[in-house]
Length: 140
Image (tube, rainbow, N blue to C red; front, side, top):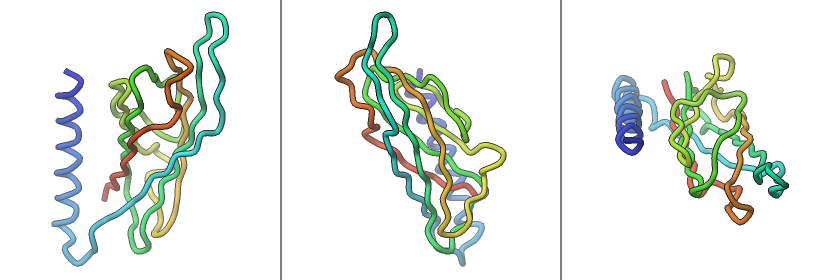
């Protein structure tokens, strides 16, 4: 079920991006990039699970201005989202998440950046704090 929901969402995002590109043929293909920074992590202690604090930084190409954005993030099995900020959760299919812009950071100026963060928990100490995939999709 989760895979079907994710596939439907990604198909819709792809069609929205294709529509935006075809509506403005003079504009170059829209591009944004996402990077991840581990701010901190801690081991399991007693009944408290291991956890981490991560930050995502989105950057657009010069000449590309967004009217919204989505970031699809894939963590290893055993990672769950506890909370997030400067974003909304569009899809929670742990360990896959899609984050979207908040009402105050939807627009990224050409060559600009925005950030959002999360706290996550892990079912075991040896699970990576880093996503193995994070992809940005600008909206226009």
